[in-house]
Image (cartoon, rainbow, N blue to C red; front, side, top):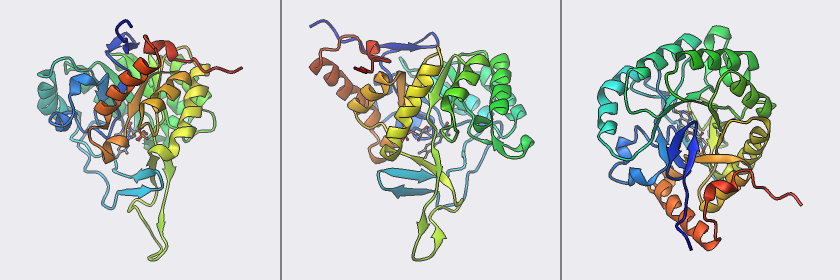
Length: 307
Ligand SMILES: Cc1cc2nc3c(=O)[nH]c(=O)nc-3n(C[C@H](O)[C@H](O)[C@H](O)COP(=O)(O)O)c2cc1C
């Protein structure tokens, strides 16, 4: 059998395989250097970066649910400037890695400022725009759940960004196809989905919320079938590549997302129960391809058989 080809490309960025560590579950990458061979991954997304340092929400901010996890970290991060000055130089010393910077803000001006700071740094392959934050300037609607706000923030980001732009969509919408189309028309080079589902849990004994913030984002295997359906819907709606995620923990999960239309995938919560999960899944994917005589993995994208 000829050599397996797991490579793929997103917005002109070559990836050795489609496995990308998801934002918020892989720190700034550096923390995983001793645990995961970072150059085995297709790439990794940094935790969300904002204009200024954010301390995050008070605890408790994580809670395990049936086949999933609730989090309300509150987008804790060191801020874009400190990232460029302190973390990026360390990442630049690493060979053969692909780094995506996840960007968020509470206003359009926040996003603009953060992108401008990150444009100054070298060693970032692309931006992933997290549009799941409340747009306080417009009365607290999330950018990613209001079509007009989404159009405005992506149009601005396209103008400011000096790198390929991936727009990470919120699943907390009625039509993911409509939101994917808006992102594409506003200039996104790719969309990634899904972010977490707004959810909550209550302690029946104390009658208190399990998470100090009361509501939180649900991730992990519990969301996989819904995420898969949303990737399928988004892929049908746009021509740009779709990066799929939501509950992936095995090579077969990746194959499902690719058949539904994903060009690459991200893995988040799985790294919480096994810090080596991302790298293990790359190995599993190689074995899956060998066992199933799939020589070129990227040919699976959108290959769902209907008859
Ligand atoms: C603890 C935690 C922190 C997260 N932080 C971010 C973030 O900063 N930016 C972002 O776009 N997504 C963030 N996410 C969402 C994940 O990147 C991913 O979209 C989601 O968890 C679904 O994938 P999974 O089921 O594989 O975890 C976070 C998720 C978790 C669990």
